[in-house]
Length: 111
Image 1: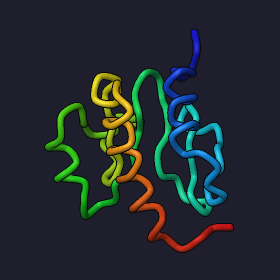
Image 2: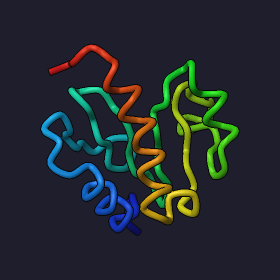
Image 3: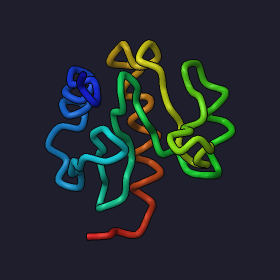
Image 4: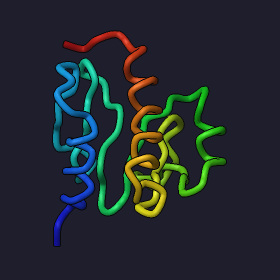
């Protein structure tokens, strides 16, 4: 069994392109994308994980396909799981990736 959806991870990689700020790392049993060393989004199982930040968390949960990230059994504020259906199209995927880029891009670089 694969730990994460490799096709979704490839789509995310293509969408990110050659952005020099982005690096990938295996985390949470999946593949995470970091911006300047801060997690922005990732692929875990067949879903996308997006770091939206605490302030945008409630609003993100109101969007179709989003639910709390409860990887540890307890919801992690500022992170959401996004269903495969919600990121099926390139437009849907880019919408969610933008949210992760916006939050992680504001954080102090860990590089």
